Length: 72
Ligand SMILES: [Zn+2]
Image 1 (tube, helix red, strand yellow):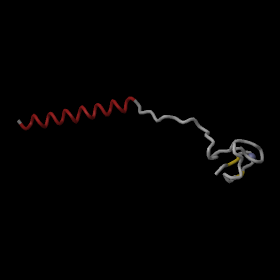
Image 2: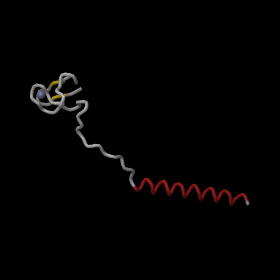
Image 3: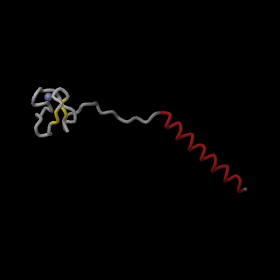
Image 4: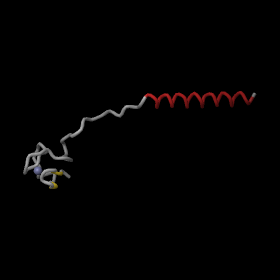
């Protein structure tokens, strides 16, 4: 729901202008569909996550090798 801070009023999406501005004061409204307020960020995987994945994989691989060695 588009909310205007200066007017303290909720607008229906159809009552706001096509530019997403308040009909009363012209302030760009929050939550207006089609109006992007924040830049889209690509969720980056931190490098230490992959360190953990590699470490866990190496550990499991070693445990598998160890288990195989116990058979003989
Ligand atoms: Zn307003």
